[in-house]
Image 1: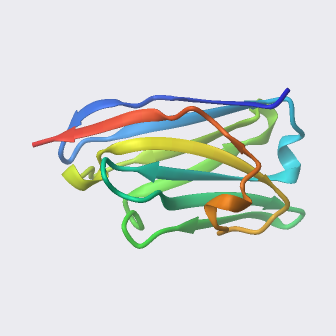
Image 2: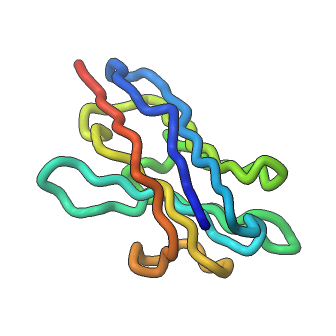
Length: 126
């Protein structure tokens, strides 16, 4: 049974930092793209980052809204993907989900992810 478990969310002041983790079990991590998708209240889901793994190394993607502030990384040995959030803004407040999709295409639309975690809340205050 595949499971993705997010952790690391919380409340932080604007300008602060957090590190989110996504621990996966039940799948061969190397074969999957892992993405972070967030959803703010009243807004649509937004794919903000993803990371794939190929024989030549990792490919990463960042949405314009987080580029330069968020950093994605993965530790295949631990089956874990991290998302470092820095210079947080009020508009970064959302539930952050990690998702895994078979293959190496990154970025990809949300519907192409096969497995999802339950999410972790990030709240940024002034």
